[in-house]
Picture 1 (cartoon, rainbow, N blue to C red):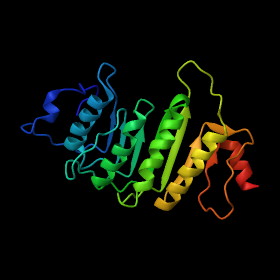
Picture 2: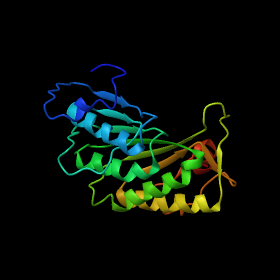
Picture 3: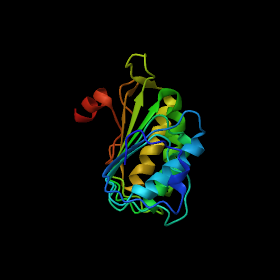
Picture 4: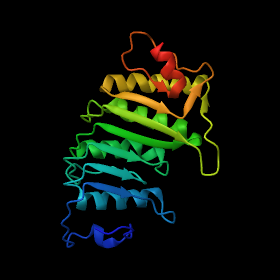
Length: 213
């Protein structure tokens, strides 16, 4: 495989194209002049060609809903979804990874502050169905980042966002996953969690100290 290969080359979708790949790590970007759905389709074509030996994938556009058997990713243990991934594609991306047999242990999900609500809602939607999807996630990490040129000021969560996170925490706990959020804090410096909950949401250094105290 070559770096900077044209993402939308129709040859990737051609059944006549013979591909032999032993790639272990693959980073796919998003093409700014195409829709998120088009870029996601191209991601699926490339992963179908190069998936057998992959252990880590970085996705800039997600994966669309796919029939069973289209993707085979038997060795993918970690994945990264960049902030250019549409939040609406989070459930289908995670479902496609699960259906492809990926023994996922870690997911890093990056997002901008403006998309945080949608990301939490869509991730919660998937996690609610994760037991049926045979989800094997252990660590799910949400990273809130600022657009280029802005300072690294932590996102302060209001009561509504804190409530959303508690709902996501519950969904992850039921799915057997551990959720952590980086780049955010609440007005009190922590997200309130019941003492009986074994999977706390960690909100950066302030909460690390609160949980450890």
